[in-house]
Image (cartoon, rainbow, N blue to C red; front, side, top):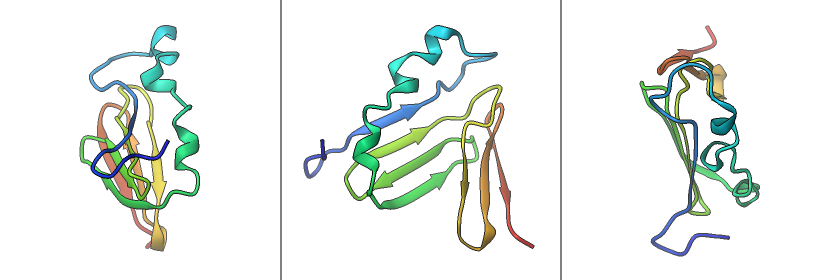
Amino acid sequence: MPASPGTHDEATCGEAGTSGRPSPRQLTALTCQDVAAAPALFGAKALSAVAFKSGTLRLVFDSGHHLTCSSDPSFEAWQVTGPAGWRFVSLPGGDLAVWTRS
């Protein structure tokens, strides 16, 4: 459902501050695996994308939806490629790696 003007829907992936492998309960928690909100993002244009030094990614879409993906203590939580060969990767434990085509 599209957001009303002045409001936004937000989806969150990951649990900051956890350590070790996720438990089966965490893997099935709606905050980590809620894909029901994903269809609203199909065809949406990303207005901004911010990759924080902490390894968190924040996307804002023209539909009013926001998507935040936290870093993971054990895995690369996400990666994004951009124009001119830029690549951003959330490293395990909460760090950000950035590469450019040289």
